[in-house]
Image 1 (cartoon, rainbow, N blue to C red):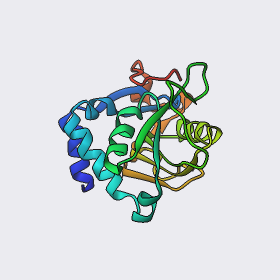
Image 2 (tube, one colour):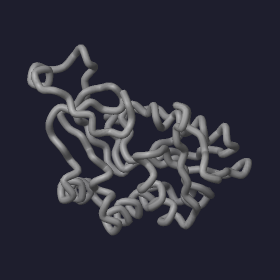
Image 3 (cartoon, helix red, strand yellow):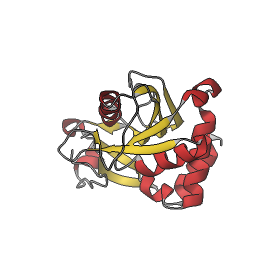
Length: 193
């Protein structure tokens, strides 16, 4: 898939929103990608996941034995990438504030893992998920995401493969432009800031 085709999937599902949004990173933005909307159509989710899997280097695809995603945002896309790669997919969640495997999910020591997210902005959730995967015995070969919102600056400590990179500006709470400062922020994400 080309970038314009990917963005057309987001627009068609009304997943690309405009307004004033408080991101899970604590930063503010005039744009928000509601990946849950783009992934609610199983056929669209499968197309995007197949494109993401196909964008990975062939030698990396051949090494991956598991896909692990952070809940909630990464669950659907992680599952679909697992399907596209023909490997099991599971997720880590935060029952007490720290990511961990639950629900009977387990990694074998040395499992070669692809960590898959929906959107990466600062990389905090991704790095926390990678730490949990490593603590559970997995070896994280790379990270992947539908969207990189970091403008290419994120460092996950492993190679990172986004399907598309978008450069919507984000702002610290004290540095809002006037048009955002006068509008209440909406918190559409699943995590408290």
